[in-house]
Image 1 (cartoon, rainbow, N blue to C red):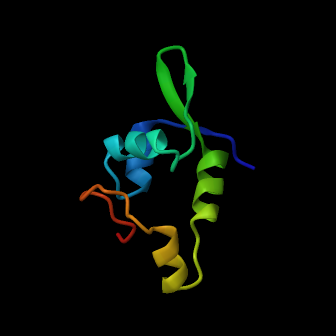
Image 2 (image 1 turned 90 degrees about the vertical axis):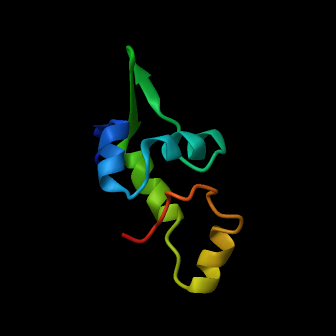
Length: 80
């Protein structure tokens, strides 16, 4: 398991989401909690991997249920 630490900037390079979206999702309990080291904020790669695994779906019906209500952010898209 890779427990490398990622910054918000690194996360936004990996996902088609704005940095503020991660914070909104975290506040709603939809994204892993970050950790603070000094004045810097990081996310554990292993927590992000678990989050991705928990959102993996096998059908569009399953996706509709998972994303019911949406993320409420016009900048978010799970399609590149």
